[in-house]
Image 1 (tube, helix red, strand yellow):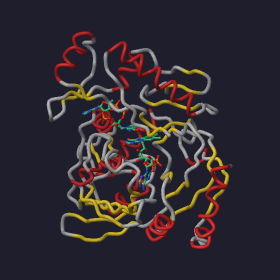
Image 2: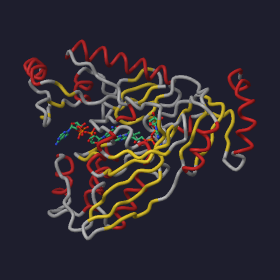
Image 3: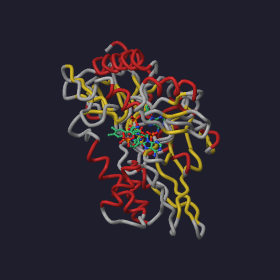
Image 4: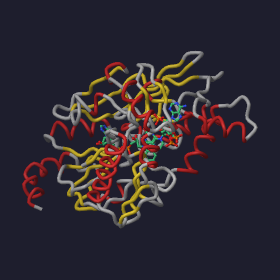
Length: 356
Ligand code: FAD
Ligand code: NAP
């Protein structure tokens, strides 16, 4: 409670200024993270407009703890920072041509809600990204991707508020420096901006669908679909995801815990010689992507459980909380897996989930 008392002189001005904003005090973050980790937080504001966000940053210096849907975080400690629950709504067509529309989406809009909205308007480009949890504001953080599509292919710009000044800045697609599950916001600009609005260019019909992933191709042939619509691609992705990924409402998780390693051609040749069965996908730059889930599975971890921390039985890349696991227990399991994979394959797995 000491940290909270020290904040009070600042907060008196703060509460007065923001008396209309929703305030939450001394609460558990368990309902706010999909791993379902029970840690406490001292104070949170629900942010519903860009102006509120700017106002907060102009009144008070960092640190902050910015939270969207909490589907890509692992909490290992109680949170002393002021929590900002990003709830900026709104989906708006800002420009239109015969072939496409540009859409501005508030950071607090649920990602899958946005996908469903686009499908209902028959706008294409994000159908492969159906059912990814979380909010739109977090999507650029790691350039969310699934089934061969990443948001960098459709994102036009990002509006973000600078945390130290409240200044609103626009980042072009190139300025976001997107990579595989990466962006500038996770590196050079880490903890410096809060994303407020994201702009996407979506296509009008006729659509070109992206069908590179085998499970999606298989779903189409099993369902007799020869010329898939964007709605059918979305249905396929939803069905596949529901069949193998744990629903965070039932079993706590944050999706893939690790990134898929991208190996140099030489390193991959060494791995392939020792493990001829290893699946692989060539990348444009000559490196080779190896599924981390396969490496973890073959090292014997799939379905492993220690107390309430475990490795999902259908997808070894997903670590799970069966109920009462702490963030530290999940992290310790992740570290054991990293050590085991490094010893067996000589490959260092990098975390995708943001650990606090
Ligand atoms: P949070 O977990 O709330 O935040 C993630 C990070 O971003 C934190 O560091 C947070 O501080 C920061 N942040 C959040 N909002 C903002 C903001 N407005 N401005 C600045 N920083 C912010 N990811 C994929 O890429 N592809 C998938 O297919 C996929 N599938 C998943 C399946 C499951 C079952 C689960 C649980 C997760 C999956 N994920 C996937 C991971 C996750 O859903 C995405 O990364 C998602 O974009 C995270 O959004 P969020 O709002 O929950 O972010
Ligand atoms: P999967 O189909 O079992 O495939 C395993 C891995 O191989 C995937 O991670 C994928 O890499 C790669 N892969 C498969 N087919 C490929 C192809 N044709 N070309 C290039 N790479 C290919 O994977 P899954 O676990 O069920 O996930 C399916 C998709 O949803 C993947 O795109 C995955 O990234 C995404 N997903 C992400 C999360 C997350 O939290 N980040 C959680 C669940 C699912 P990529 O991961 O690079 O696509």
